[in-house]
Length: 282
Image (cartoon, rainbow, N blue to C red; front, side, top):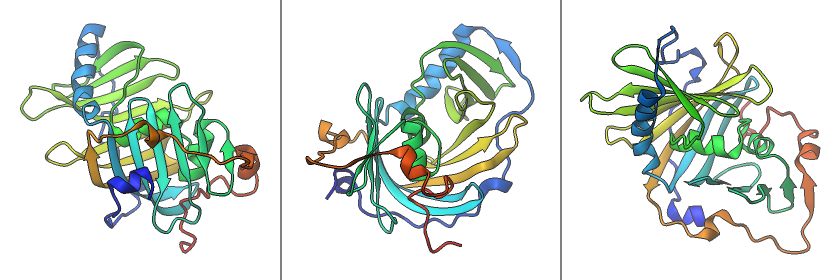
């Protein structure tokens, strides 16, 4: 049994309707710019709670559309500071394990061969989302952990956007808590490198602040959502502050073992057909 499956083995069913028709619940109008000191306070206050949940493990179900094609699949994950492991579960057409650890090679293992390539290409091959490993960790945990210069934009007494000037840049939309004493992250928006296309992750938590689901959608230059992908990832069997040994983010590969280039695999099938596509869906 794999490391993650030892933590959790059951995924709850979730009735999902494609979220393409839903509007994003973040301000679209311009706000008032504020100094970096206030932006830093909001950013670190809003990040404190989700980041305190790491290391985090969960089962996940992903449903929606990618490239106009319906997807329905399950996977499990373990996320820690700059570390991520994804693993197939249940009726996935092709088994995989993907691990990424800061300063180490990123790879996916399919039980038949090892794939080498950029982490964004590998994540897209498995899940259909063209996000690099660290962005996928942010999506699954709502914990940004982004370094760079900060600026802020206040919309009203409740909404505040933190702009993180990095490469690429990130916008973190935060909402003041009902008691007025703190902030929570509602969405993270960033740009795909070298393009005007963006992605947006919108988070939903339960009353205790535990992650419940996240909507991940593409965003065009004109803020139209979901043309490339629009999915909801729903969590179950969430474990926070999990005791994860170093073996969680390692995969033993026997020698000799065939190695393939991810570009070769991607040329043999549509980019919109990730491993987690359920072949029964037409």
